[in-house]
Amino acid sequence: MDANNAVDARQGHPVNQEVWEKREMREALAAREISAVYRNLRKEGISQRQIAAMTGQSQSEVSEILKGRQVMAYDVLARIADGLGVPRGYMGLAYDEVTEIQVVGAADEQQAEEDESVKRRNFLAHAAQVTMGAAVFGSSPQSWSASPARTPAPGHIGMTDVRQVEAATRALRALDYQYGGGFCRDAVVAQLSWGQQMLDSSATSPVRSRLFVALADLHSLAGWTSFDTGLMDSARGHFANALELAKQGDNNPLVANILYRMGRVYLHQEAPNDALKLFQLGQIAAQESGSELAIAVLAANQAWAYAMMENEDQALKLLGLAKDEFARANVAEAEDWVKFFNETDVYAMIGTVHTVLARRVDSNHTKYAIPALSRAIDSYGDDMQRSKTFMLSELATNHLLDGDIDHGARIGRAALESSEGLKSARIKDRMRPLREEADRRKNNPDARELSERLNAFFAA
Image 1: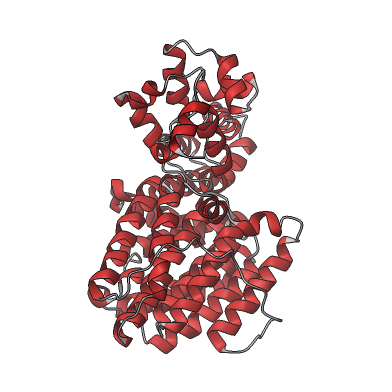
Image 2: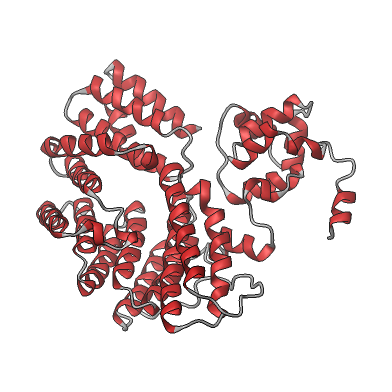
């Protein structure tokens, strides 16, 4: 449909297109604050019934959104934009069908009926084949994602073009850390679509090698932001592509980092055995790279997996290795994608491992978790709001386990306040232990109030 026909098709639309140009509305659309969008529409005289009819939602859903319920799912955002007549670019949504499929993840529909354990095993096979050159866990699966849309590629590229991809990745990663994957995922995928076309351009060997690494890192970020918004199949596809490109770029530290990130996905899914296999593959790549910092990252996450498996001895052994390797590492000279693991993250991992052990093995681990988590929280700035929220939740959990209920409840409330504005599907999952511990102590008024707040948060 051309522009003129599009305008004709919108004649008689309940929402005047000038509404979308108002500053307050543009700001709400850019932030994807759908509750604010709906409130602005109500001010324009658009009823809840009309909004429901245009967006395909029930009036009760519209009412909940007006009360503040967040909308994060891509398909719902796209349906709202199209139904209301909002230019998709105002919400940072994909413009064309091919890009939209890539954003949502073609694999999400194609593999919907496939058992998650089979998907994990297939990815392990692929990861082993890429990392080791042999299908250790089984046969490698088919292509991971649909081909991206192709626009005319530059005839020749140089280092300046690659540095632009690297700079964009750094900026987008900063947004992910601060606001969550839901805030920037579409922008990451759009940047990736633009970057991928350069693979068809001519370039010198050093430029092409650096391009492989830059695109691998961007795919890794796409995988991480997909994971953060709950698109697991899309995350898996991006991480698989990232692995292949990192291997083509002969960059073992990045291979290790990608395997670490996919392992974190499996920890989140309560599959520590599968996560451990990925971390161990990543450890091999990290050792080949000679990067003490990469080894520290993988060791810390193996400790987390062992803690989830209630193997206290191995968890503490790997945690010790992580601390030793970090002490030896030259953080200033480390490659960009490993530098995130600084002293603050070491304390965060120590606190996280001991929190899991405190809940699953021995509550005495709180005496190690509490000081480590407190130190991490004190070091996080506004640019790491999501991580700070996770650690506040863990710290509150430890204080409840320790019997310091009023202090735990106070920190739990701080965790809820810290989560406001974050667009991350993982927040609720990381707060489940806190809710469980608060629920167990409902006979205490502070715990009961926290439990009620958490249950309202989960219901929103």
